[in-house]
Image (cartoon, rainbow, N blue to C red; front, side):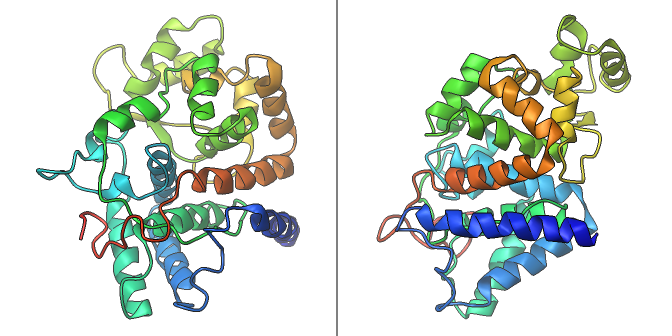
Length: 319
């Protein structure tokens, strides 16, 4: 345990230096003066939620990812459907899948109490909760640039178009991430978030029954036992052998042709992404470093700052 703690202190030191290079409009120190209790409060609620249900860590990480890929990191994913809001919660990638909204509600309530007023944005809460979830499950820490504001709109159509699909091939994935200003290293590193959590049967059924060349046959049969050819669409399977612990086994699975999703296994198709899969499989430290750097980069996608957007009082609706 001591060596693991030392390992992540090393990683944190590197990320602390890296954070200085990010947009001047965001700063990891944004709340230090106006509400020094903000980040400790978020951490406390996240740790409590993950303690109650380890799977929640993966869910909170996924919320931040799906938020950032749709018009930037602006908490649009949290908005409920109204006459004027086309909620992203019912988009294909989120419907009956995205979760953790109640935890975000609790964080917002606790943070507003700690700060005395609503000054912490829902978008910042998502970014910090994602980091704290990774840490709670044994992963690296990093300084989260802060100062985002919340959107007043959402787009289900944009979510359907922009959130990467589990059925994508490698060229489609590369292009999808490129559209967000993310490169191939970001693609592989951020896909490593699948070291945590589960996927539903309908997202990997075609792979385990029809992908005969790029899948381990024993692995396919094992997954078929809980994912029939028809029915059981919501049956879950772990994305890697240790779905509640942040490690590099996700990449070891890809090398062994045991990636659960087609979009996962596509990363091990040669070229730069294949080389990165091999590197991350062999070296958890490099993966953790690159993952944290890519999380910061993703969190800086088109943030609303200054007078743009608002600080929502309720994360589920505009003020």
